[in-house]
Image (cartoon, rainbow, N blue to C red; front, side, top):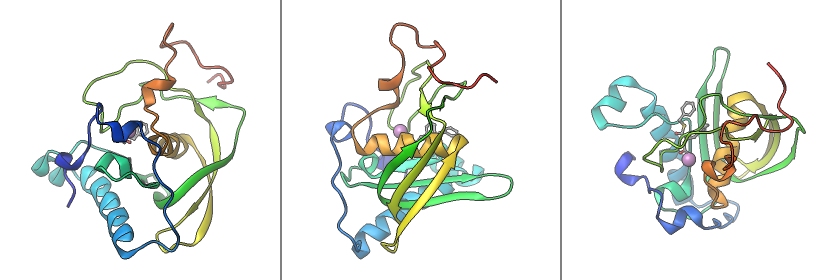
Length: 181
Ligand SMILES: O=C(O)C[C@@H](Cc1ccccc1)[C@H](O)SCc1ccccc1
Ligand code: NI
């Protein structure tokens, strides 16, 4: 199983590289890696396992974060009515809302061992094309936390960290095109 020892931390150049497309169909090894990334997220959200193995809770993970510069991500977000459970190859935002959003508490990252305060502007809604674990092309329409998470993970595939998006002059300035609550 993956633990925090497998998570690459900021400063490692792999987090600033553009990851390589995965040839379809994926190899058995690539499928296994994606399954391990999903398992890490599920484990990190289980209080007993997370405590036992000192895992930081995560709802998303990108392959560069475990030292693999390939375009592979996992997102696992349990909600009331459904679990957003995505293991994807070559994810790409193909369209998005004009409206933006952000998390009031800002964002964190398993690869960043420090707090970086400030609002991270994200598209409120995204349409994502990707390949599922069997290499089948799929399209996802996401909003809310799943939309934010998938944008955070796709950024990792392009060497972008969440704090790159924070307004340096005024970290808590409300981003443009955000709906008023
Ligand atoms: O480092 C990662 O990529 C995992 C991030 C993903 C993420 C960060 C901010 C917003 C959305 C996704 C974190 O592990 S997830 C930690 C977390 C848990 C619950 C809600 C928000 C963030
Ligand atoms: Ni991250």
